[in-house]
Structure formats: structure tokens, C-alpha cells
Length: 319
Image (cartoon, rainbow, N blue to C red):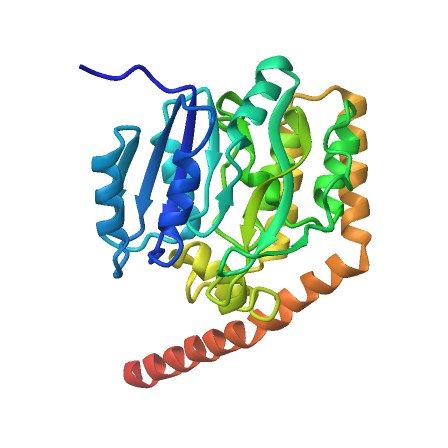
């Protein structure tokens, strides 16, 4: 007998997550709101991840486990969990984070009560590799993504240097379907949040229900996101490896196209474009865009020289 679709779908993408996966799954199964499914997409892990997932699948029928034959990259694997979802609301969960027991209960109540809200999320508490509390996020309660004004939401989502924790909130599936999901480049999650902000309000719950784990094996630490944006882009999508990539330029193009596609009146669209002008004129963004060009310039020169050498060899052989 087939189960009825759950109200909430939780997408858990994982790659070699054995160290924290058990705690992450236990925190999901301990939720006071129980009408959910967990969709695990194992990105060809080589550790005990598959064994752990198989054991939990046997333990709880709400868990669905899928395994990729090869590593398809972080962004495609995140997006795959959404593509397999059946719920009305959707949440991404990381294999190293944890949730307080009332996370889903509080977020579902918000989305049920107010259709203008597209994302509900709580404050963030950082924990270390042992689960000990560290600092709290400095961005808790600091931006206007809850505004009824589209431009105010869009401005803060693209111009305020937050950590994108809202992407781990509870999201309306109907809104998420109308986005490009997580882009396969550095800060692709930031574009997704901006797209959602153009559709509706975010609601921040002033309780520490999201436990974000900081540890040495995090991708941003291991790959050095700020030091090597191209490596981080290849981590998001291996298809980008070796390609000429301009992540900040891609992000800006994504913002621009999001405003073009959004269902806005002329005033909202004009104000949103002004937000993009402000974004472009910020020194930090111009610096990133210049850095992208500097990073790829040697690759462009190398390929140009290689092409010229190939042409010269061809001419010699032809003469």
C-alpha cells in the first residue's frame, strides 16, 4: 500500500558524511512535527555513509535512500533531493548540522498561517565538531527579508553579507519550483534566496532551532572558498573543472535575469534594478569581479598560446 504524500519533504544530500550523519538523522527523526519524508541522496560516498543510511531506512519508512553511481557535484546533488520530493513544503538538511526538536513544528505553523511567506527559518546557533555551543550567528534578526516591499527584500538578500542560512529553512515547494534551484557555482545558493525573495516574504523565527556545525572538514574550510573561488565552483559542479569561470559575474547575471522573470509591477521592477546598480557599485563586489578575471586570465592566455602553437604546427605540416 502506497503512503500518502507527506506535508514536508526533507532533502539530505550527503558525501562521505559518516562522522556526523547519525546525529543529523537522529535530530530529524526527533522532530515534534512528524508528517515528513527524508530523501537522502548519497553522492557516491566511499565511507560508511551507505551502511548508515541503509540501517536508518530499515528503521523508519519515512526515509528514502538513493545513491549516485558517481559524484555529480554538490549543487546537482542538492537539487536532486528536491526533484524527488513529494511534499507541500521542502527543507534541505546538511549531513553535519542538527535541528532542535521543534524546528519543523514552528516553521510549518508559519507557512500554514501566512501564504505571503515563502521561507520560514529560525535563528542560527553554531556548534563545534563535538556538539558544543559556540557563538550565535551575527546575522540573526539583521535584515529585511520579511518586508512586504519587494525591493527591500531583494536589496537585503543581495547586498547584506549574510551566510545564506535561510536556504536551510522551510520553503514552499510551489515557489521553489519557479526558481533555478542552487546554481552550480560559488554563491549559487545566494541567487536562489534572491529569487525566492522576489516571490514573497521570509519569516525569521527568533529561536535558536538551527544548529550549524563548524568543523575542519567543511567544504568552505577545506577548499578555501575565499581563497580559491574556482575550486569552490568545481566542488559545486565538477563539470566546471577546467572551464573558464567567472562566479561573481555569473551571480550578477543570475540576479538580473531573476528580476526580468519575476512577476513584478513596473515600480517593483525598477526598484529591483536599482538594487542591482547598488550591488554593482559596491567596492567589495567590484573587487570580486576583478579577482575573477585575474584568476582566469592565465588560463585564457595558456589556451590561446596552445591554440596558436597548434595552428603553427598545422601550417608547417601543410606547407
